[in-house]
Image (cartoon, rainbow over all chains, first blue to last red):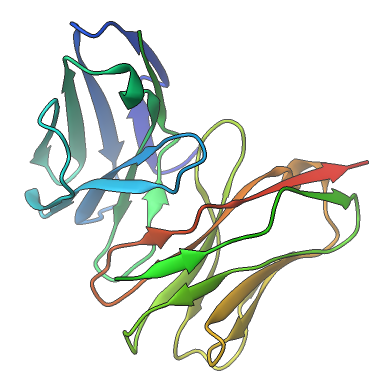
Length: 111
Length: 113
């Protein structure tokens, strides 16, 4: 069991659905991240939050909408996704300059 | 921009033998951290070992050791006495001064009995 919890573990959604991924950490970290991991590709950093403020958006399509209500919780709201968005979505947290602690990921399938 | 290179194809290793996973990196930063993560089929990224760029000694953590050659910009992971549970993807990552962890493409390791 890691200090970063992601729910749900698996998600299947249609292209017209709206769903949200949740990430929670109680490690006292001040930074949180969303990564996308597609088959045979390196992990892609999507969003970075430092002290609840978004500090990085790596040209992510607007159909992905992050939300960080506090330093312990991070959401990724999904709407009108495409099949190519099917991937493993990993959340991580860190202290500034420290290593990252990852969650178990949400395996998303868009049908 | 940082670049992490892991080029080995999938590897099969006999149980109880050692395996070395190669990682080279490219950065202009003077201070950075190097990490190895293990990702089993469940998907979780598990931290294994860390090496700071100014650390003079190679990092060790149980059966894991990091062969750090700064001049060559390489940070190879050595897993000694492989176990069946070591079968997984292994990712090399670097955390430069900007604190944006960058990952390589990973190495697949399969331990056979």
